Image (cartoon, rainbow over all chains, first blue to last red):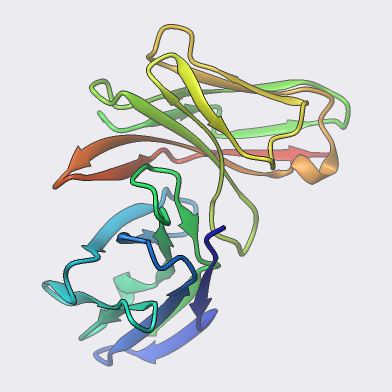
Length: 113
Length: 115
């Protein structure tokens, strides 16, 4: 079955710096790659996603890149702010197109003011 | 708040007791999912419904777990004879097809502690 590995598990950056989180997946048929942000004690929220026929997608300070050949996708946050501090999860449904997602282990991002 | 709501937010129970959680999805969403999340891990899929039909159950879901969605609206997840290993956050999500892809909207979860 599909397996998703996420790195790093923790990331600490200074406010204003960039942060990059990387995920690798095993199922070459995977076609959709969402990223979720979960603040302490709150629900996971979809922040950005990318489909397999697109290499990069941007939304303000957030971008996601996809390398299908290498089977990895990354979240890039530029000009980080303290409110970006949270746990970030990558996910994929594998070859299916349902809400049955396989999640990575999560990255705890701390942005120091 | 028109998002996914879950009740209760927290549940403390003694080992061996039964517990039931409720999830109310976003009203126009046909699919409803249950996930479990333990500390420091990503959510793990448990089961999902299309309207009232339960379409898939994870192998993680032991016989002590049962989920229902009787009228295709709210759902309940029951755990019988709870064990300490059941302690986790139980997340519910409903989904919508956006740009041809199914996207999940999560509730705030029910935190279960089994003593």
